[in-house]
Image (cartoon, rainbow, N blue to C red; front, side, top):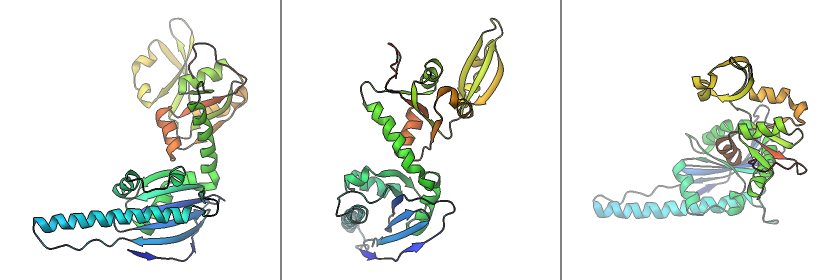
Length: 299
């Protein structure tokens, strides 16, 4: 293995000004790059190259030997990545991570092997922002990873998002927890229990519209929240005339004074926020401790 120590370099990245420092490990089958990004300043810490084993002749026996040598060298390469990550992203004085978050980027095969073999320090696993697959290695892969995650890395947004997700999933883990999730559950509490919601969390790309409809037979006003798929189902409009249609995210922003809380927007780019958007419908709320849900209401 050849470890090349590089010098500090800086590069302007538009509006990415933040005090948060993120660590990046970019890796593929040819080498690994260890860097940090703080605002618009990048620091290249180490570059590790992987020397592929030479072919050991021809024939079945030689192929087996080549495979064994390759696996031994790969294990050593992955162990070196894990050790260098600990060396550069753990403060030796405090024993704690020295970065706000950590991003693994590169070949998915290498990433899977690294995590599967348990070669990554558990203190750094807790700091993982995301694991992204990029088409390139080393410097070009670093640029691609930044581009993919630019909206969450900019202006300290990750710190706020991590704080919100920690609070929300902290309530989810409690029994009972003071939280609601999903469109129906969240909107029911907002509409029926003013002041009950302490923190309203919404995916910034929530693709749901709020409909105000009137039943053509009874004259009753009906409120529905429909995603794209549901909008294509004619059963959702049976005997109903649409009087108003508005993106739910926009409606929540307009009505924040009535509910006493403005929506806190999150991306789906971190592990926690991706789980929130995928498994919790991208909308949920932390409830005020002084407000209790009635019997039979799900949280």
